[in-house]
Image (tube, rainbow, N blue to C red; front, side, top):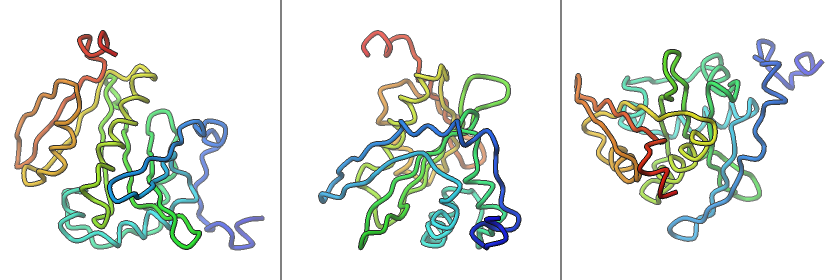
Length: 201
């Protein structure tokens, strides 16, 4: 009925298990530099259009830093696959600000679990207007706390060697970080359940 009424796309993806698995308890608001409040929650399938708008606000450099490719478009099919997740193997947290009574997404951080070990590959995007406020670091802290509660051993990430701001986000964590440079990018491994850190927690 919703598709016939054009409320949903005719090819709308819906993961039947996602509804009852949605982690509504993962939600908070943090105030950043300049007294900017940002609300954080887990991504929803209804965030598709807002995530597409976020993509189109990025500069070419920002797109390349995130996707390692000069992507020019973000079509419907790609975006809806991105926002429709199972919340178990993939978890995504979005940051939203309110403007004129309407919330819009200005940041996103996610991890996707590896198939062969208990590590998640993590990545972030922050609207360039809101960079250097600590939003990326806060998202990483949230994902680390969730990962540890879920028994995830650590994170991996690929960061271009030229992307110094993103590298600093990872360097700020209290966890040991192993970095290897290959093909112009750092391959990072961060064990978030490192015993020395757990004893201090």
